Length: 366
Image 1 (cartoon, one colour):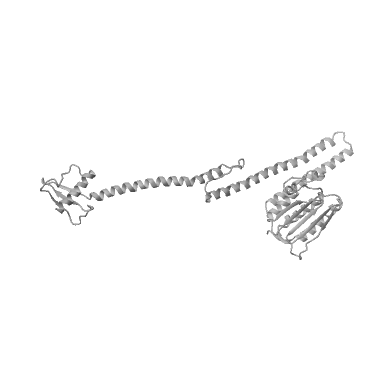
Image 2 (cartoon, helix red, strand yellow; image 1 turned 180 degrees about the horizontal axis):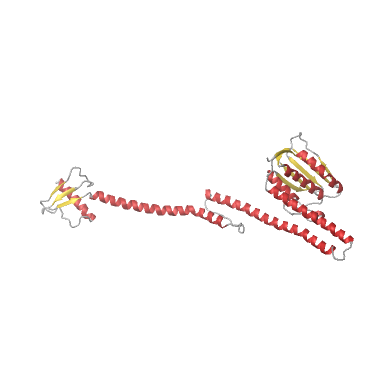
């Protein structure tokens, strides 16, 4: 009885699964015999066979296990497809910011440096990366705009003396010019040539300062260099009626030693002292003070608006209303700012209430 029941269960399962259609039912014949090998269990994992009345044999081959394999295969395939679609969607969403960063940076050139990535979304690593790139683009845009202004201003400054020289030759060297006119034209041409030469030299010094510390860095005593520069400028200051003196430092000797490129440091002091003497008035003063944390140069002179003083470091920037502006290139303080930046120092320029400037170079940051 138990044997027949086992076969009935198996054949019924086959019928429900639609497998084995048309095979004779081993249980339909009253004389059917069925044999089950050892190991038959409820899962039907072991073959069984039954013999019908007509002598035919019905074989049941691991039906339940086969069905389980089918459903497992379908489930695994479906899960794989779902996982693939979900993974693709998630990866596209995660890679979209990277695509935006790549596309924007590839599109930006010197003509459209104003564009930014401006990535939105959560404050994750990609957004921080986009902000870093945007900050870099800000600095590049500032540098390019500064370079364009510098080239335009330099072209204008070089064109002006050339135009003056051409006009002087056309007017002063006409066919009927006498000796006085020729001498006046010669003096004018020499003055314009001097201005042009000074401008070109200033441009070269500015370019050298912008390159950074190309030369050997040495220990430099600012007190000694300042004393030498003041001594060299004393003659010009005396002719201009300006009192020039060096107070030195109150600190012990040798405390004002800094690391720097000797040529650039000397040029820094030459420009500061020369600028203070030139933009002064008769009876004025220039005071150079060296300290353990740097140096300070104060001078009398015309009143400078407080908001204009920090802008004087820009190339060709001149204080409006100065009578001596036409005799200078407008690069003196620009060169100073570039030298200070190359050394990693700090520069501050402030207008004095009584007129003139107070320029401080702080070397304590290095």
